[in-house]
Image 1 (cartoon, rainbow, N blue to C red):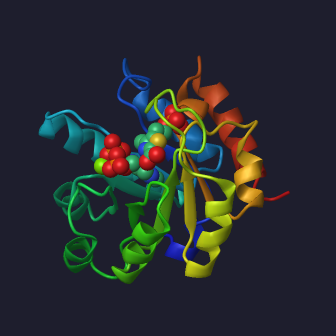
Image 2 (cartoon, helix red, strand yellow; image 1 turned 30 degrees about the horizontal axis):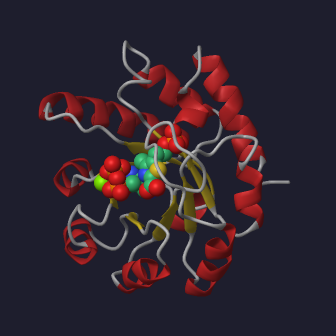
Length: 212
Ligand SMILES: Cc1ncc(COP(=O)(O)OP(=O)(O)O)c(N)n1
Ligand SMILES: Cc1nc(C(=O)O)sc1CCOP(=O)(O)O
Ligand SMILES: [Mg+2]
């Protein structure tokens, strides 16, 4: 299992059950990993527990093959069952309880919207990264844009990797990195593509933004 500091900088791919339907889940996620994605979040809102377990197990194997880490969205019990990592929103349960369940080696991240106080609280609860958003209009989560580059700058004082999310593309991602984002979390900008080859190409381009 790759260690935390190695993977908490770069492209953070997040799955989407619509974009990755019809057999696209595994080939597109493998393409994102081949293109350098460091974290892969399995984000599925369905109630089909057996399908979610089956898909998450397959993604866990892919992440292990590529030295990346699988982040389970929302569901601490699924993360525990797989020995995977976890992302929790403000309504998804306690960060501290998740840490007690998953242990010190798990990556646990927290949604902080555009609120520095939520980020401070998450860090106190041992979050490994803090996620701010939306920075741009999102096709996955349309609505108001709240987060700013000033927030990214202010959050550096917390000395915790900052993840940016919301409407991120190859055209706007570099600005967020310049202002302190350690990771770009992307759904549509990566996976709304016609082929796995296109996903890999986009992943390589996103990954290259972190080396320039
Ligand atoms: C990296 C990352 N940041 C934010 C979110 C959003 O989480 P949440 O607010 O719990 O909303 P849902 O994604 O669960 O609908 C995330 N999933 N990942
Ligand atoms: C899952 C999610 N959370 C957000 C937040 O602001 O916390 S925005 C978002 C959707 C990100 O998808 P896309 O890259 O397609 O905009
Ligand atoms: Mg959630």
